[in-house]
Image 1 (cartoon, rainbow, N blue to C red):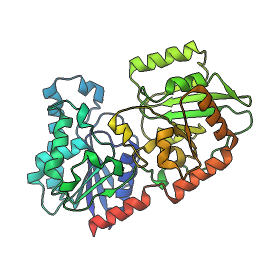
Image 2 (image 1 turned 60 degrees about the vertical axis):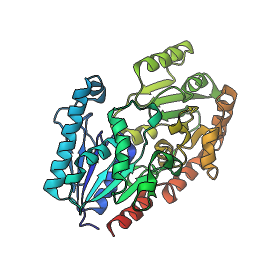
Image 3 (image 1 turned 180 degrees about the vertical axis):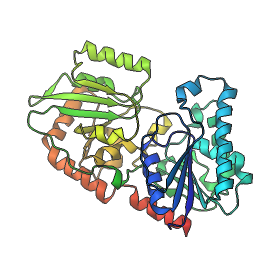
Image 4 (image 1 turned 120 degrees about the horizontal axis):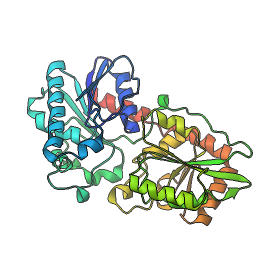
Length: 382
């Protein structure tokens, strides 16, 4: 397997999501050479193995919010420049395998498909589907959705994260069976150690991800007014948040006089995530969103749950979402009222050492992506 030469391509930054790190690390493990083509929208900090070469579509970092603010024709100019570079790399380096890691990358491939050598194997992995009901017609995302109808009959492998999300893809057009590759972390990239909750230490809850409405954050902020057997409750909010929503949360923090118990940490390089998770005790995955993406998240679609347990954090989650994790004691369901939240956080604290142990055990024996990735990769190259 080490003779495979691969191009991994994502029209985004490969450090934005955990799977972008996990899967490229595993590609490097099983390939002799891996080139990663990415869009230069944020600082690059991750250190890959020596057989990985990073290639960007522009030397200057131009953040997404800057690109989004530009006229439509300028957005397409950036995209087509990326697409042209993808074709140039494929033609020059004669890769055995091209891995497309998000819908825009699939659209780029659709545009250059006729010029890609037939012997090149194409793998499309989607870790976060697009919702056709909310996409503007004739946008890049709209064209990316349409591209699947042309590309799916010819690609060699399609993988995505969750069976419930089959509805987002024309899998009936595939020439070969699809595979499920859940958004589980890679064993090598997480601490995999039990956490400690010492006597009289504050109980630290963490929500990691996009900080937005519908995640019960307001109720969690109010919860920090309470105590559990004399312990304070602290809340860490780590991730991207729109200014207007952050202002509303900060106003609530001030109104409840809990400024010393709620911490905002902005989005940053993915390498920060495990480090920050290790400062907390309990992961939060509570949501009451009605959109179809949230409803079809299932067991394999939520990367944050598995990042939590990979760092030994038991997880407090929504009642409906808990149905995907009934066999795991470290997954605790809750309603979103104050009494329920306090009761269930108290349960997690009381049983903490047992639950952190079980979280690590589940991660190491079952809920990492290593085994699934290796099996899928072998099926492709053989």
